[in-house]
Structures are given as structure tokens and as C-alpha cells.
Amino acid sequence: MIAKNISAISACKTDATLNWLITITVIVAIALMLIVLSVSNIQEVPIQQQLQYRNQALTATAIIFLGLAVMLNTYYAAKRAQAMQKNAIAAERNLEIGIQNTKLSQDRIIAERFMAAITQLGHEKIETRTGAIYALERVAQDFPQEHWTIMEILTAFVRENAAIKIENAQQKQEESAAIDLDRHRERLRRQQQPELNLQPELPKLRTDIQAALTVIGRRNFAQDREQQKLDLRNTDIRQANLGGANLQRVDLRGSDLCGVDLRESNLCEADLDGAKLTGSILYEANLLKASLRGTNLSWTNLNRANLCSTNLRAANLFGASLRSANLQNANLYKANLQQATLKAASLSGAKLFLANLQGAKLGKANLHLAGLIGANLTGANLNGANLTGANLNAAKLHQTDAYFANFNEASLTEANLQEANLMGANLQGASLHEANLLGANLMGANLSGATLSDVRLSGAILTGVKNLELHQIRMAFGDRTTRLPDYIEAPTNWRQYG
Image (cartoon, rainbow, N blue to C red; front, side):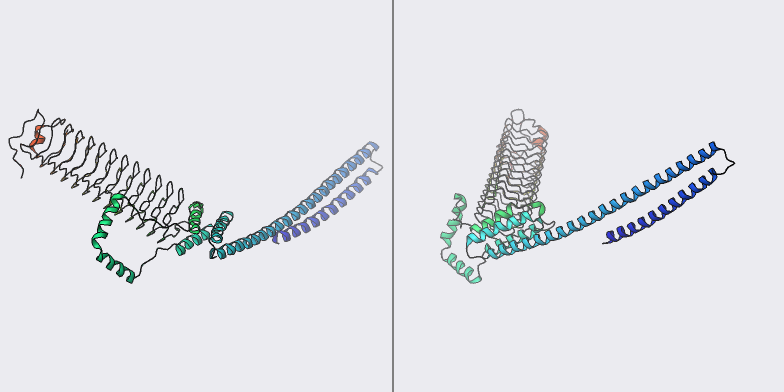
């Protein structure tokens, strides 16, 4: 409207100015012609000069009228420009009106499709509910501004229809009484189940819940709201198929995901604290910086999974398979990795303080600079593992196999290596202060620069060791049962230990 008024005012000014210019030009031209003609009629002036004055007058008049023609052309060009401007303003206004109408129509379509789908979510037939879920997905794809709202609706649908059932106090008391009556048989069943890797038969997931999870898993993560997470807490989604799903930054705390197929899924920065993932498949899953504190991952397939910088504090990984998994800088404080398979896994810089690794398979694993203070590695397999610079102070390595393992510059102060098999191991520069090597096999091991002060060597086999010097042995405690290399005699100050 303002542009239209300005255009009108400008047009009025242009017309007034042009009228004045034309009037002045005509008056000047007529006055000039009269002056020249009057001068040319003076009798005293020669005829030749009179002709010259007339030519000059005609030339000046022609120039003046030419200028007048130029002004007229300019005037009409300005008028045409004004008309074009008016047309442009009108077209712009029509476009604005069209956009407004389109937006209103779009909002109406969204509202209609929204309400229709939401209404069908509560339908009694599962086919109708499933169709409504996919209809909502199409709305989210067609109208990105509604993406987050629809994802929240779908997560709410899953929470409402697949919530974990909480048993009441009376049921718990009845079950406790039943267990007390048959305690012995129940205890035997629990002991045998993990050994046989038997899992109870899991219920089949409802089709509509699976559809909702599928839609959530293939959403466009870039359209999620910043600093907000989709809420799937305390949901029972056992046996769900979420292979390749994008569950980045999803909140799954306390959820039951036993038997879920999550292979190649994206769980980067997801929150899985206290969740149950027993028997799940997480092959090549991305769990970068995810939180799995206290999570049950027993018998889970985590082969080639990315668990870099993941928080697995106090997690249960009993019998889990982590072949070639990436656990660099992961937090495994007090984690249960008993009987877990970690062959060729990368645990560089991982925090395994007080972790339970009894019977774990760590062949060719990379534990460079890993923290294993107080860790229990009893009966573990460390054959060919890289433990350079690792901290194994007070660790339990009783009967551990560590053939050709690399302990270069590792710290094994007060570690228990009783009856450990360290054949061919590299202990160059390692600190074994007050370590227990009773009955350990160090045949062919490299002890160059190793600290053996106050080390217990009774019954240890050191035949064939490399780079062992007399002053190192003098610092250790041995006896006649200690088998030394041929080139070293037992120190005279040795006394039988204990």
C-alpha cells in the first residue's frame, strides 16, 4: 500500500514538472524567433547577415524542439516505467495472497491428515493403527516443521503400548515364597542357564509397535530438536527388528531390549543406562559416546561394534562377544567381562579398574595404556596381546595365559601372576615390584630392564629368558625350586620364601 502511494505521488510530480518545462520551452522558442526575425528585418543590416540571423534562429528553434521531443519521450518512458511498476506491485501482492492461501491450505491439509492419523492410532484393529503410523511418517516427510511433533507422538505411542509391567508387592511376596519353597532347584537352574547360554522364549512384538519403532529408526535425524531426546524409557520392545536403525541420542534408560536386532544401527550418544540387552545383536553398531551404565549385555553380539569413549561402568558383559570391537577410551570400571570374547579388540586407553575379566579371551587384543588396576584376569587368555604401558597394579593374573604378550613398560606392581604362562612374553622395562610369580612360566621371556625387586619367584621357570642380569635376580625372592637360565647362578643371599 505504501509503495502504491509513493508511486502515485511520484507520478503527479513528474506530470507537473513536465508541463512547466514544455511551457517554458515553447515561450523561449517563440521569444527567440521573434527577436531574430525582428533583427533580420532591420533595413540597415545587410541581406547576407539577415540570412545568417534567420538560419541561426531556425537552428536554435530546431534544437529547442528537439529537446522538447526528447523530454516528451522521457516523459512517456517514465509513464511506461510507472505502469510496469504498478503491474509488478500488483503481481507481488497477488503472489503474497497466493502464498497466504497456499499456507492456509497447507495448514488445513496438515490438520486434516494429522487428526485422521491420530484418531486411527486408537483404533481397535491393528491394521488401522499400523496404517496410521505410516501416514504420520508421510506427514513428517512432507512437512518438516511437524517432524519433531510426530516423532514425539510415536514415542508416546510406544511408551503407552509397550511399557514394562511393574509387579505389585503382593505378587513379589508370592513369588518370593515360591522360590523359598523350591530354593535348591531354582538355584541350580540359574547356575546352569548362563553356562548353556539358554534364554527363555521371548514374546513376539506387536506389529504396530514394530512399525512405530521402524519409523522412528529411519527418521531424518537432522530435523530433531537440539538438546532434546526422543523418550523411549522403560519400554518393553524385546525381539524388535531395528537393524540399521538411527537411534542416535534416543533415551532408552531402563528399557528391555533382549533379543533385539540392532546390527549396524546408530546408537551414538544414546542413553541406555540400566537397560537389558541380553542376547541382542549389535554387530557393527555405532555406540560412540553412548551411556550403558549398569546395562545388562550378557551374551550380546558386539562384534566389530564401535564403543569408543562409551560409558560401560558396572555393565554386565558376561559371555558377550566383542571380537574386533573398538573400545578405545571406554569406561569399564567394575564391568563384568567374565568369559567375554575380546579377540583382536581395541582397548587402548580403556579404564578397566576392578573389572572382572575371569576367563576372558583377549588374544591379540590391544590394551596399550589401558588401566587395569585391581582387575581380575584369572584364567584369562592374553596370548599375543599388546599391553605396552598398561597399568596392571594389584591385578589378578592367576593361571593367565599370556604367550608372547607385550608388557613393554607396563606396571605390574603387586600383581598376582601365580602360575601364569608368560612364555615368550616381552617384559622389557616392566615394573614387577612385589609381584607374585610363584610357579609362573617365563621361558623365553624378555626381561631387559625389568624391575624385579621383592618379586616372588619360587617355583618359577626362567630358563631361556632373554637379557636377565644378576643384579635383577638379587633383588627378587627365590629358592631352590626357581629354575634360572644356565648363565646365571642362584644368588647366595636367596632364602627360601615362606
